[in-house]
Image (cartoon, rainbow, N blue to C red):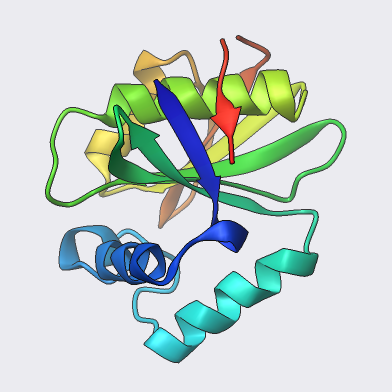
Length: 157
């Protein structure tokens, strides 16, 4: 079973876990803001409480925290997503991708889902293409993707 825990509901140890993952060299190197402090992390979590255009979730699979999915620029028609897996795990990219697709299309009910990846992030690019995202643009730093509606059932806490 998949359970999504909203970042606004995280307990202290979960906040610390997400920060540890987020600042891990294998994850941080693919973030737009590569370095963040603990204070910035806590301020970001607090800012999510009043921002309806963003949703961030800690994803649990069979009671184990496996990664993070997020949705930004949420509007009636579309949103953009991000995701990362615990740096201590392998093989959960598909679970995270299926979870975020279900949430975007069934819960948020967006018609289009956008993604971007650093051109050097070949794992993410391969995953997006494997899940039916269409490549539509590339610049010197990023590749951009879009996918239209899809489907499943998720519990949000």
